[in-house]
Length: 244
Image (cartoon, rainbow, N blue to C red; front, side):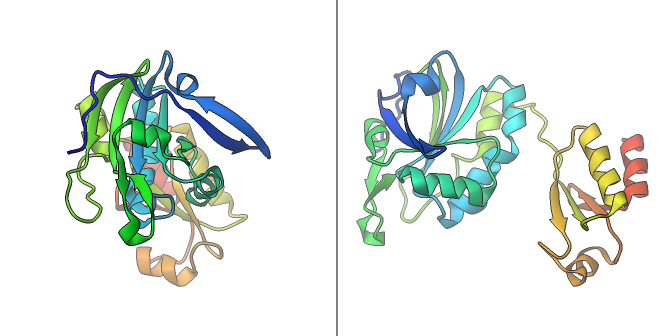
């Protein structure tokens, strides 16, 4: 049975990290001393659930966590620093600190090192999350010991509910744009002025006009979605934001 280490101190480990073409040593004191930190650990960088849901979920809610007293969010995986650095670039992670536990020392100290040789992975981390206050584990969410790769309790939403059940999650905003479009620039500025983060889909880079028409029924940009609802262009967005 995987151990729940609530009330205990995190393992004392030094991580080797490659940053700006230099090797750095980062200790657990550097990461946790005097801070409130969320940690989530997963089987591997670039793997499906980790890339599609686990990491993006925490990145999307990072500002909400910080508004509720969290100083940092750390993702730990039994991967080397080069893999973790490339994964951070691929995922365009802005708000998460990715830590490589290449030798599995931290994960082993947590009692979460598991054998995945049947998948060709070797020793990896079981999926879990925890809230750590000044190096002491306040709360752990450990995935059930079931076959496969369960993902039921270590997600960002579960952690946010524990920290503050009444916390308001940020709106999900996406907009189609085109390079050089002044109306698109205006729409993005309005979203920024209202403190709304957004995902930008650029025609000719991330999508085609056909994709725009299929999603919105329109051929002009910008086209803005908020929480899955099509708002429309920059004028419609302005009216929506004023009404809100």
